Length: 269
Image 1 (cartoon, rainbow, N blue to C red):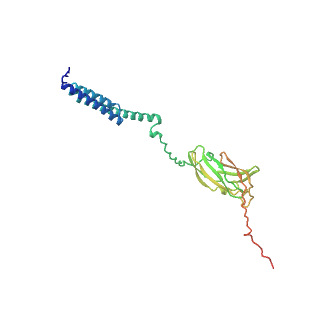
Image 2 (cartoon, rainbow, N blue to C red):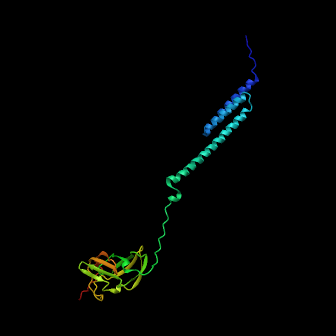
Image 3 (cartoon, helix red, strand yellow):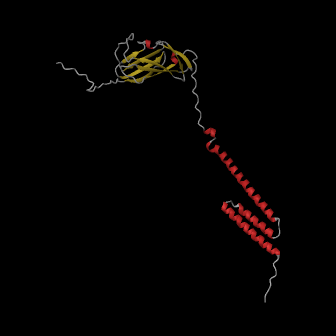
């Protein structure tokens, strides 16, 4: 006996077709998002679209439009949140920089300060206020020797000092006694004015001919021999300064002639 099925209502056909189309659409959306490497938000859209399809299959035609609007709203909200998070991270890094390494201005090397200008003299120096430090370098026997005097004041900021044989005494000595002095050669101290300061050094150079001195300072006295010497210098009523130095042996240059340059005496015939 053959049974005949009753015809399926049209509403059932439409529900099946809408369900199949919704499933296919969800699969397509999932595949596209996997290929594009999207974040987990598209599955929410697919789920929303599936829900809208189910609502359409049940006869609610306004469900699809509502689901699409909700999915779009979720996507826009997530982008805004990500942008806000990035901005917050940047602000946090900016706030941490001064605490860790200081500001850019504080990390810069300080500019070199200009050197202060020497003060102007305020009057004449007291002889007892002048401090002298003698220095001798590169002294060689038989050659002029520079006796350098470094002048400073003990208390006055700046003053003018007159250098002469009456205000300054200088001498060179060895273990046996005085070798040379400005007392016997006062012409080495021609009257001159120098500015002496407390925080700045004034240099005064004298020349010793590396000879012994005598009364009247004759020029043809005996040469000082290589060895150890001491230089003394003091202002009137001041403490003397002292420096030790060595009078070096002079280096004699030797000249060697080759046989080709030697002179020959012709033989007499």
